[in-house]
Amino acid sequence: MKPIKFFSRPLLILIALLPFEGSFQDKITITSKRNDDNSITYSYQKNTPGSHFIYLDIQQIGNAIAPREFMTVSGRSGNLFTLKPINEKMGINFRFSYGYLRGEYNPKPDFDFVYALPFRNGKEIKVDELSNIRESAGAAKKGNWKAFQFTTSSRTDSVFVARKGLVVEVVEDMNRDYNQEYSFKQEANYVIIEHRDGTLARYGVLEKNSVVPEVGDEVFPGDFLAMAGTYDKLENKQLRFYVYYLNKVDKVVLNNPRTVADGNVFYSYVNPVFLTAEGLSKLKKGDFATAAISEELITQEMSKREKKKRAKK
Image (cartoon, rainbow, N blue to C red; front, side):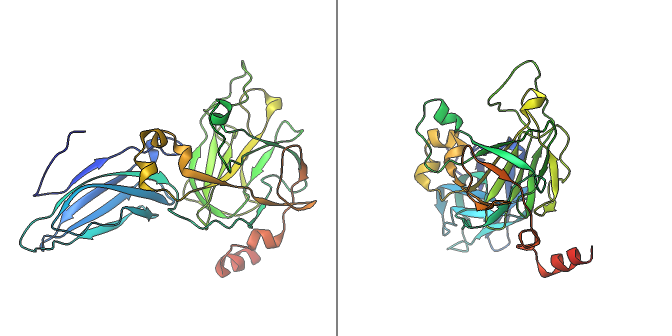
């Protein structure tokens, strides 16, 4: 990209860091406003709920102190920062590019948090563990990769919410292909739910147009989410589920074209503790487990108001 110098107004250049999920529907725009005192206020707008990490690549700055390079935004809009001129009689020279990723910068995941198995109470499921697609292609194994494939003996299965959170992304318009059998297919319906500790849960391979909550809804453990889907044959009904979070990133990683091209490199994974009829468990390949739900699990992250509202039902 050819450098552009300026002094009278700020320049914004978007670097399209590939988001881990979906496409550019998470687009974030940054605008600027010059104030009467020669300061410049930068604001953002985004068309999706949930937390997003914004990274600034500051290329030039003059007559002002550089702002923070990493920040998390959660609202639909707001102010990012204001640059104030060191010499009030002169304008600010500021040139930068920016990128964004879904998630909270440097979160603090609760690794001991107890999740519900995302199936109907009493439902027995078989556990398989998924390989990272890059690992299957011969790439080095990602250290803490953890993703599950849950299957049952039923041709129809309901999927339920495993933990309280905010629905931040829904894709449910993908069709299955009855003519092929797949172990993996990129195009699949899914829901992403963001949790209070900055983790995200992805519920994948859902039945087309079966998702009940909408983007922006708050959901609770045991709430109906969708119907389990399949890539191909009806008997291959399944749910692919994993919990992940935006790991601490640095400028070296962000400035490497190879790592930026692979959105997965920015995320780490949680091996959840599940409540089952057999007890609390960290599941592994080959396990059979029975879904269980309890009042304590449902209400563990509820506010006092939410608990009172639930008690009145």
